[in-house]
Length: 243
Figure 1: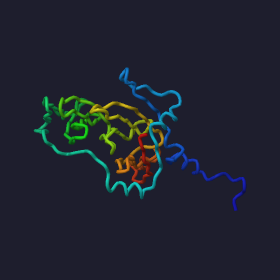
Figure 2: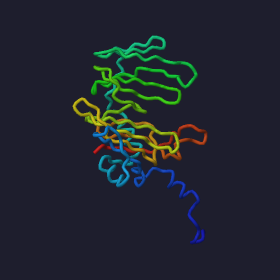
Figure 3: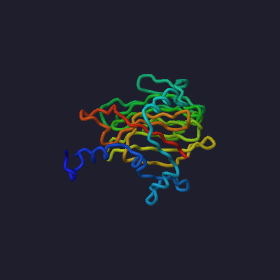
Figure 4: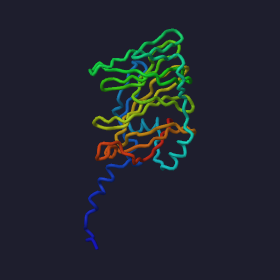
């Protein structure tokens, strides 16, 4: 029988530090968009309460995640109408102009390739993926004007009520985090709302459910990678609602 003063098992603290919990899931840096100056300002005070006024995050079980995954809400259309790629040249026809993207296949910092990913008719935009030497981005182009409205690190998801665009990706650079951006859709315009960097979880798979919640499989940054350097296949699950 262990002595009454015996310390807790050595891994108790480790488990607490490597698990996403209701207490740490909301911890994040927060920046809000300033429409007057058209830039983002980091929130220095009361960021927790301000973030809680914009988002609700709940821990959920695998069963609910998989149930909602059976009928996800998606407004993506892979129709390639108007997009043509011949060799290294991608052309995309909009109402007013023709956009041209040229690959550079050299093994230098100028390396870049472009692929047409489909369209989001609900916001009247095409999606083009640009892959570069050490970066990539999903670019939205207005289907009428050809204007590049936004660029995201992950494929943008549109909420079921068609009011918000969410991009969520795992930042694997130090410090590792979940990077989320949210934009409002108002009168055909895309208006930035906020950016948040969550420090205690990183996303794997995400989708919108028919109930209006964003469902995400996640890992704590300390358990995102296996000892072999592969992305872990063991996850926790959360869902997020925009308030």
